[in-house]
Image 1 (tube, rainbow, N blue to C red):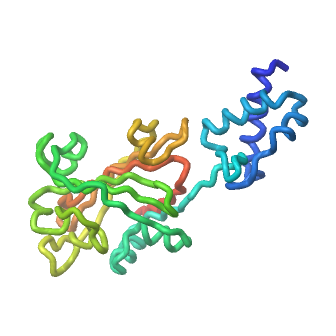
Image 2 (image 1 turned 120 degrees about the horizontal axis):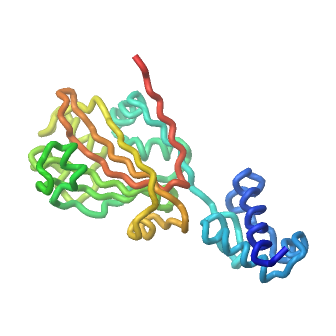
Image 3 (image 1 turned 120 degrees about the vertical axis):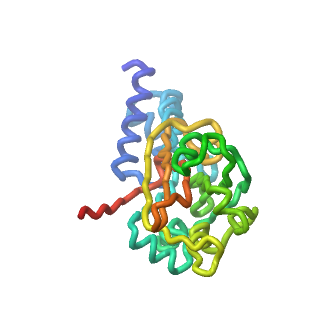
Length: 254
């Protein structure tokens, strides 16, 4: 078999072991000598096969430069109204609560708070003219130090002004704590989320911010939050790596 085809066969075999669970995250990959003997080829051909898997983000160089299966801080997110309300009433964000309940270490970094022209999709959901000024809070979510999600929250200025939503600091209990505080200036109760989901390849800025390997897609969600009067109180624009989450949606059908 030509070396050009053989290195792909080597990559296919190791990839299959990773995807089937034979090789687990942080396990060492087979050595170059072992693979050269197994496939009756040279170490140079083996290196080409391993390079393909590194480009796909399946293998990385570990301590001592040994090649290992890339650890993935996968997290399961359960999205239901009941668990959102339970976490909200306990003063915990859903992301932090889900991560902590799985023994993980969540972190939310506030990247920016600003007044910006509303992107068209956000303007439509907030019922403001395209380009109208809105408040945005940009955050980076991490689990165990690994970037997991970019999240931009948009708010109409008349709702956000005079609240901590416009302050460049993290908010205990999150934005929903401000919106739903019965003694606060907003005093709205969130009763519905509508999510629009698309799967696409990442932008260059998203690759850099989320440390995305080559070839990994992202899920982009636009979540619109409605209060008990049917008014939109928040639009969240989130970008999530396609290889780090397992989602479960529970949909009650009347």
